[in-house]
Length: 301
Image (tube, rainbow, N blue to C red; front, top):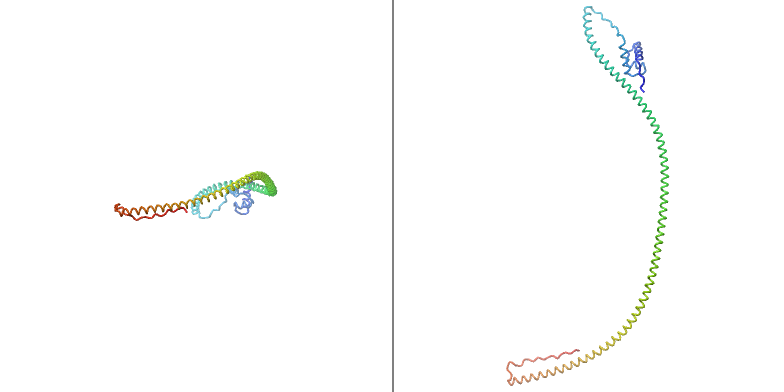
């Protein structure tokens, strides 16, 4: 909410008081006298107060009449021109000042509104800070509760992990015991099967041993018989060899006798041929060739 501005009467009273003390009623002096107030508002009211004041009487200079008349006329002319220019400048300055004053008042109003907004924002800020402090306390409380819950959760998680580990260990031990029992059962079944197989194998081995014994006995008998046959055959071979040797010796002797007989006949025939050549009963081309002596045939030792 905008603050109420100072009034014209307050500015006029302050300006009159300053003039009464012989001071110049400026904006700063009026504001110091009032103790507060917007400079723009004081300027606007002070301008209105000055416009309402009667102009001060001027004392005329005492010069010769003709010179005074001429000088007064020239001064009046120049003063009129200067006054016109000053009035124009004053009007422009007054218009500018009025515009600036209006702008200043608008800015003052906006500044007042902004001050109110700033005050409201500061109030909201203070309230927000209070709420933030309360929220911070609540956050700290919630953080502490969360930390306690987290610690409890960690403890519960650790306990659950330990229980799970124990359960896993018990389960593994149970599984290992079951597997060991199954392996033992399989081993027993395998042992029983091996025992049955061993009994069957032993039975078959006994049967095979009996068969082998019978076969060995038969083979022994066959070996004895074969040895007897071999002995008989060896004796027969020895007898046959002796007979063969005897026959060979006889054939060798007979061959030698036959060879001697043939040699003797050949010698006789040679002598007869020699006798016939001597008697010139045979042609000369049948002359005796060198006689070859045949080697006796070698018999089998």
